[in-house]
Every structure is written in C-alpha cells, then in structure tokens.
Image (cartoon, rainbow, N blue to C red; front, side, top):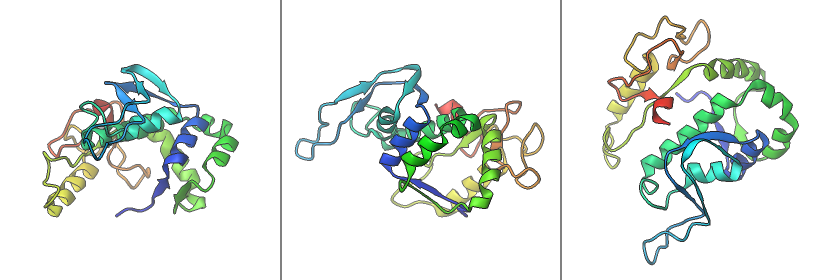
Length: 217
C-alpha cells in the first residue's frame, strides 16, 4: 500500500534544489545537459554542456535536474535503468544532506519556490512526525530495490514475484539480517520503516536484490 505521496513537477524540483542551496553528488561519468533524441537520425542532439565526473560535485537545481533526467547521450546515459539509478541517488543525497536547520533557515525561499509546484496528501498534523522520521533517515542506510531486466520481464512481469521481493525488502535489512536489533526499527514502536538500517548494521546486498543506496551511488 502507498500510504502517502508527494508529487513534484520538474520545474518545482529545480527550484526546490536551488532553495535548499544545491545538492552534492558523486558523479561517476559525464552526463550531458540539454540533449534529446533526434527522431529522424536516431542520434542525440549536441549537448549544451556537461556535468563532469568527480567526487562531491555540488550541483544547482538546473544541473541536478539534468543529472537525474538525462536520457540521451553516450553509454551508460542511454540506459533507462541507469537514469532511474541516478534519480534515486539524487533523492538519497537530498535526504542525507538537507538538515532540519536548513529547512527552517530557508523556509520562506522553499515555500515561495514550490508554491503550486508540489502536490501531496500528507495531512498537516503529521508533518512533525515526518520531520522526526527525516532526522532518523539521515543517519540510516536506505534500501534500494530495482526491478531491472535481470529481475523480471517488463513486457510480462511476474507480479507475485514483485510482491515477494518488496515484502522481503520491507521485513529485513540489506545483508539479509534480522530486522531487529542494532538500531533497526520494527515499524511500530518507533515509527521507522523496517527497511531503514542504521550504521552499526551490515550494509551488503541481500538475496532479494535489495542493496544499500550508498553502495549504488
């Protein structure tokens, strides 16, 4: 079940990242800016610029959006699963880097930047609980479960297998350990999702294909 959602349109994402002061990403390969597929030639248009590889690259909203969305360029940029991986890395970096103090300090900028650009059904009275959860997630390891061609056939997905893999990921941390102990939330007493894993736990891949987001990014 999806209990709540937040939907941000592309312009809203760019402006939100700028309002937060940017985001720092480990860029593993060159990512083009401004390219699109030429339907007549089957090739990519010329890049307007590049996000160059390097550790701790600080991106503004425009760059972060292209890093997350670029889909036409030299391999591995042309791979859709690779693009989705980059998107998850940006979300993970924001979750890790945006501190409550930053949100408070930039509240007015964020509110003005994102007005009419973000839609959510999270009740206002639950926002304090989500702030507390955000603090806990920053010191945790977020699980990543990708449904690639290696896991299922997109044109004929095994939905039962999808449900099984999701259930396994939600009930045990990466590495295949038990979901209890070591700071691991049980999803009831402390309100933390069971797939949030704390630093003193193992952070390897598990049999279901889930892995820590940091190991991906």
